[in-house]
Structure formats: C-alpha cells, structure tokens
Image 1 (spheres, rainbow, N blue to C red):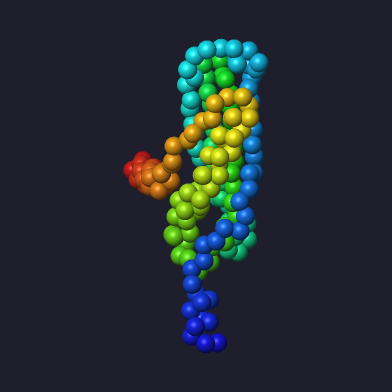
Image 2 (cartoon, rainbow, N blue to C red; image 1 turned 30 degrees about the horizontal axis):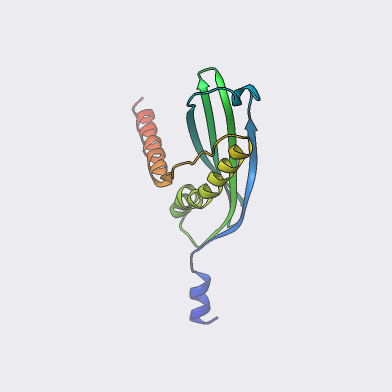
Amino acid sequence: MSEQEQATEQQPVFSIEKIYVKDLSLEVPHAPRVFLDNGEPQVEMRIATSSDKLEDHFYDVTVTVTVTAKLTEDKVMFLNEVAQSGIFRIENVAEDDIQLLLAVAAPNILFPYAREVVSSTITRAGFPPVMLAPINFEAMYQAQQAQEAANETGSNNV
C-alpha cells in the first residue's frame, strides 16, 4: 500500500448519507373557529436533538422542533412538531470530536430542513408562515456539557 493510499484511508470522514423527515404532526384543535378569531398569537418554539449509533461509522441524528401558537393560555391555534433526521457517516475521528459532530455539526445541517418543513406545514394549514430564527447548537452543546459537569460535581459533594 502506498503512502498516499494510507493517508487517504486515515482521512477524517463526515458525510451526509440521507436526510429525511422522521415524524411530522400538526394539530389545529379549534378549527375552523380559530380562523375567525382575531388577535396576535403567542408563538413558542422548543428544540431538542438526539443521536443514535446505527452501526460502525453510521449515526442517526434527529432535530425535533415543536412550535405552538396560542391566542390565550387555553386556546391553541396550532401545534406543529417536526422530527428532521439524517444519517451521517463518521470515520477516523476521535470519540470526543464525534460527540461534537453529532451535537453541533449534524444539527446545523438538519435545522434548515426542519425550518422549511415547519413553515410549509403551518402555511398549508391556513396560517401565516412561521420563520424560525437560527439556533446556536454549539452554545446548546456547551450548556449541556456545563450542566452535566455541575451535576457530577454536585453528586460528588453529597
């Protein structure tokens, strides 16, 4: 095996194998009356990420976006949840870096797809589109790491 072939074999690999919608739901519990109501809805967005190892070098990453619009505390205009997923191939990458790729890089790739599905679904339901602001997945990952470190420190002091 030549040096060039060995160098190519050891190159880090991070590639998208497949992007797909894993789950999609839309509820309009007060239709059709909700379309007659006036008022500015309160829109709330929640986001979560998860990842699973499928087999050697293949990982499934999911970004779940939940958007709820309410006219009042007990009157929901709509509830939309999208689980946007992707299968990623990761090879020749250190374990710590794999976690970073799964928690930051992959969600950064998936989020624009999820944002488009949310906007399209809500528009098709008869509501004005909801434009989601970009998400800083790196900050989310760092906050999660800090929380886990704090939990470990707290449990060691007990």
